[in-house]
Image: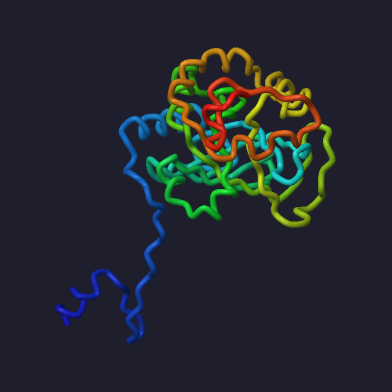
Length: 256
């Protein structure tokens, strides 16, 4: 009997039937570095008042819908770093405990993106434009810690689905999560965001996107061409222009 239990290696015995709990799926990726663990600890202390305990990294950014470019929302991300290459985020329409959950995002490193089948890559948006434009922020973190966090996300990708149009600061909203999930994308050129969208966020959160952008100039040297930068080019209702350092992998070396 002792040998049998030893071979079961922790599986439960119940009512004469031997059953084992399936092990949870672990995403691929390198173990968290000491630097990442330090950032997580700091985020837990400084940003840990959101609607979802355990998801301590708090980011605020913007998403246009992939098939509806002018449907653009402000997304409050509460993220959990699973390992050095994979994070998962729950998206809300605000930062209070009464905020509505309206989407999910998975974030993967450039290394994991390279392992994706070609047919899968069309669902993943690039992050360099969000970071180098200054639009993606981590409220509550000191500037140096925020820049360090953004440095760790350079060249990464996100897969985002929004499941409820809850309305944003005067925009139309649905009373319930109607319709199909919407694939979201990232802003990759100046002018893609609707006028006032970023400015309203800045006033409410008392931040200055232009200043943040200037402070992140040194991150441009880390930027590599990314897939999907030009995926929505020409689909917006306004003239747009390139963000320095943000280049599509299919047009690298060409003029803007």
